[in-house]
Length: 602
Image (cartoon, rainbow, N blue to C red; front, side, top):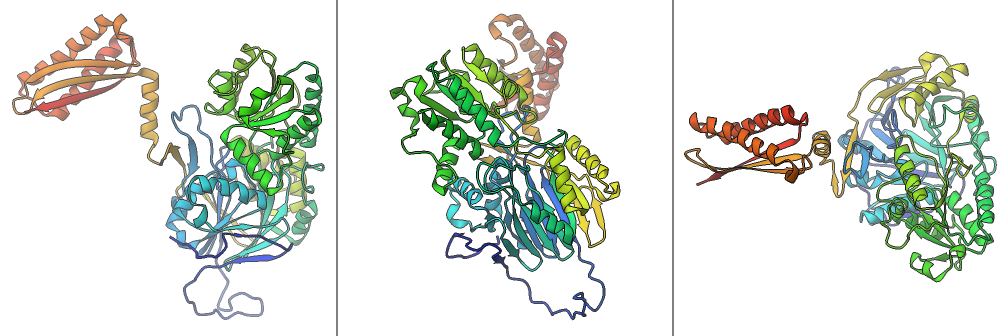
């Protein structure tokens, strides 16, 4: 494993345009003779830049891309995806890191664009495999450190704070410039990656917000300067590319939230707001409204508590000490004096809002006088879960406000007109749409072609594909490296695969029947059984006739084995399974999982 010894875990950057250099030991090589052009005089340099997305394409989340030149690799982002409905019991989905682990001696470090889960969530799992330095802005590194603490690896990982406008040098072949951007979380950056074959601009997640809550607006001038000098490849996010126009400013939500607080002023209503824990600007606006209306703020949900604590300590969240209270203290205040900020805006089963909606939260119970604001829009695939939570809250009498009723949420992602501006400024030679489902990537390709790009210079890639770039050419190779999904279930990483998920789905849909038989080890004589146990298939007390017939069917099959002197347990187990399955399908048109247990008795 490639590790470094270092004295200070975190290096604070101090000067804009400062260059940070990360080097690793390279094998001794004979210096190449160079001509006046800077190329090897012995012939044309044939080395190519390889761009290898390992996540984030044809999907939402799990963003990670590797850039490889000769014997060096840098990685941009390392995120998670959240499980889909059919991934029963799965907590997180992380990328397949096997290609990077196989080439671990080449990996120089990970550069992070911003602190959302789909860009940093996989870092602890990756760093346990590959301990390399992490580079990011102040807030991003702060959020990463919280994750590393939870996994007990904080002190072993090298972290570097980099300010927007600075450039870091990684190895011999990569320089990465951090460009100020705007998104739904502070300290977001785009990247300009300078390589021997040209400049790659990676937008990260962005929108063009002229009135951000914190910091300055996106540095459009720098994108224009890069475009004027010449950009080899643009990798631009595609999340909102199907939506026309411009994304509204984050500041517009603050006025709506303030109005809702005004409407609740004389009604003694408790206000609850669910939003993304990493949307610090949204949290700040909620706090501002609470302060102006003399309400106390309590925070619930593990991720929300962690982010509020980290952002407050780093100066990205300003909450007066007299305003923030512990959740245990809410009983000391009237409903009209309280605001509760919670996780669960995506309907996650174990999140605080879901447990509140189902009446399972220990500290909070929904009241008919409550006003609940869901300040987010459902991520594609989460719609059903979100609406289920909304329905449950309304059934309990709460006044629920969500994006369909009022503009209590704005996206952090650029729409078509903003994306057009990015393309017009950067003017790339080649283009790869990223961060989106396949339909989004196709829409983005069409948009780029409408802006004048040749369709042959636009590449719709998939995870595991490779784009090989020279100064004047690009070659797309499909399925070039291993990629896919690794499931995290509890403390297990990768020990649950498709076969286990298939069994879980089978059990959830059709139930289980266990057949227990005791057999003489030497003679094959059936000593007891068959006993049949049913779970999730039928209610036994109301299906006694079916269960009796099932025992008879299994018993007849065992009698045949006994008459033929067959005592091989593997054959008997297969026979029990096949015979019982055929019978149950004939009777019920259902196929429960059948688990035969044959015990050898001496």
